[in-house]
Image 1 (tube, rainbow, N blue to C red):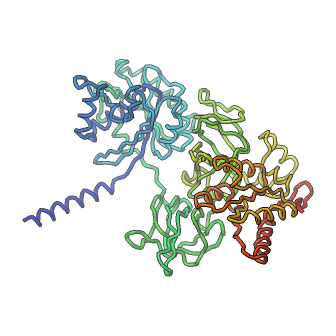
Image 2: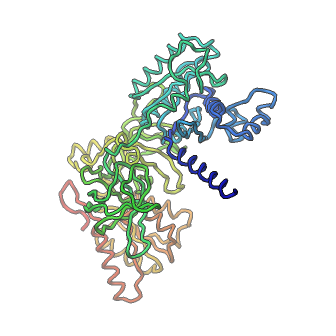
Length: 583
């Protein structure tokens, strides 16, 4: 009897899991100005769709802010931070999961205050739909335009204009029609393809889950019905294959695979692929997952690819379709949302994290900054926190990318401060500037100089005749001095940095400044921990040379010879004379 009951329970559980796993998932975000009612709307949506547990409701009722004798303050279901509850505003992004018989949902409740615009951009970065609230008593505000612009910038195709607090205007149709037209005009100006305006009252629950009798003149769906039926953007497989490699899987000598997540297109055994950066071609031998081999891998699926030919690939490399390659370039432009208190400045070095690849890059040109109040473009020399600008970048090593409008994964990256390791910016790639990089005519050089008043890395290279590099010498300070003299004699601007003579807190600032100056740095210390090697690799990329210690004079001579051979790869051509300068 017990086994029969367990079998029935197990079958019901499996049916439940199959049903829920098979549901579509819609990710959406809310945005709007302060006190527009975003948190109240999400709380009401969760409550009326029966997605709130009894203990959560009890906790809200017992809150000292929401006295148990009064009505429920639905905003407390999402505003979880103490500061949020005390100030009555949303500060951080709150993610909530709920489900209906039709779909699963992940909602990001984002702040409305201008000070936290960067949080809104973060919460909306993975959304398929944005709900932008409009206070019916105030109309479209500067923050409404700002959030609509960010939604368009992030490529969110579906936007809902939730015109809230209709109860305060007596559910007047004329007021709704006027705001609906204003919002539709704004969305059309920004190029948002699909817009739905809904008259709601988050406080009273009108048109949230069910149709309201207060708005008989409104023939559209309530908010939840729209969320359940709006088409979810999907990759149908017609896009080109993009598979950034996350790690190499080598459990034994008989198997070598590459793990990652499909960022575009579909993969089948036998498909022809190209490996970047080597550009070697081969075919997919097998697609392996935890459940065994698969006949197909689709976008957003994490798998391991086994290739027919042995190809050297590592983290940050990419497997792509042979028919359509991504852009491969170290110069590109992007729209940047700046997240840090310190402004973005031209020619300052940052780490770029893009599709598993991490390189060093500089902003070498700032074409314009967006004025959010007028949605107009203005010249600027720096970009402050919460600002948005069109920026040109140059990276230490090429990236493999598509335009953001074509692929949101390979077309976006984040900027990281190399010293604090904090994320300072989010960027959406617009175009490949490699042709400009290859154009060294006097006119093109002058144009680049006009875009930034500061000296560029390219100009430093042309002056010195070589690129910057780091030679890491461990446990042999005498040899580090010999290497410095040898490089200097060979025409390289080389400088020795002895870690024992520089305070540890300042070493990275010193190395970074010398790198920016375009020098060849010899770094000497007794032992270099793995973490510090990683930081050197982040700065120099493939121009980090680790010099092994030699115990004998002959060995030292061989090590010195190899170091000088590596240095020769740093030389660049002076485009004014057509000759190599470093000689």
